[in-house]
Length: 453
Image (cartoon, rainbow, N blue to C red):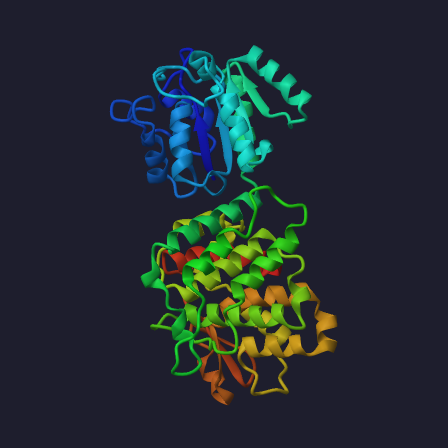
């Protein structure tokens, strides 16, 4: 979660570790904050740099007064950059009274005493939800007057925490935690990914999935990322499922007829990820789009990670945006242990899809696709069955099923192979390599195999 904090440290408020821990201790540890080297008052960028250094999940940006805010607003898109905002009302501590203020406010001293109200209204007019902003202030009387004025002009009442003490700080921490909803996590992970990948054009490899010798006619990468980055509004919609379905449709749109799923550069995960996106595109674009009517945040995150890992050549370590999206999944100690011990329930799940009379259908993606095209079986299985199947594709297209005929029995003693029938074995892939592969596997395990939990 990205927070904007507007505070001038007036009224004797500590400008160091004590205040940081009191306000944001629920998100970050400030044990490494060096008050001799870092200064909130003199160099507010220190806070943002510190949070980015010690956390891949949360960032805090600080403005000390109206002028800091104006500079920040001129350089970034506040709607995209921040998920919640905390504002002090009185922002006149050490402010330069010689600098110009908005023309209608002639009394500079009075303006800065109430500058938090001006900033609040300005941000609200930009389209930032009032419910995702709060006041943290010692100006109780001023706040009462402001609330009365808001009521007169029908402006929604802002959240407020007064008397900057332990009780109010505890309430503030709870409020911050509440802002970090699953929707906020999903939106933040998508935005951070798109912004990062726009700076990494050399990593794009989508044209390598061409079904012939010609390069795929892929839309401009920046336009593609911009459309994804802007897909989810900052205010959580009441009809999230409609937004999620449209998002996945946009995400998968490029995996059309000219695209052929394949393994790239000896990376077996690209074979799985490209097939997952190809099937998703075909299903959502044609007669099976109902499968995507009830997507959750974790489902959208799953498709997003698969897609970006397929079309961009990313490192073997989890990206920062992926670490944000992992928060949507259940990463349990049991899941990690089962993966480490190769206790992945592939056999039972394969058998539930497998038709032994069709000896050619040994590849899970083809079996799943055939079932999806069989209208009678589609009714029996239900949408959740096929959505879960798209998760299980990751496992079955990395741990490959092969046709061994009767020789399959000879492989029973090999630790990395399990016997399916007199025809097939599954050759287990190793998911325990530290970094992305193990992180991703352990996070999607319970969604892929809910009966194993």
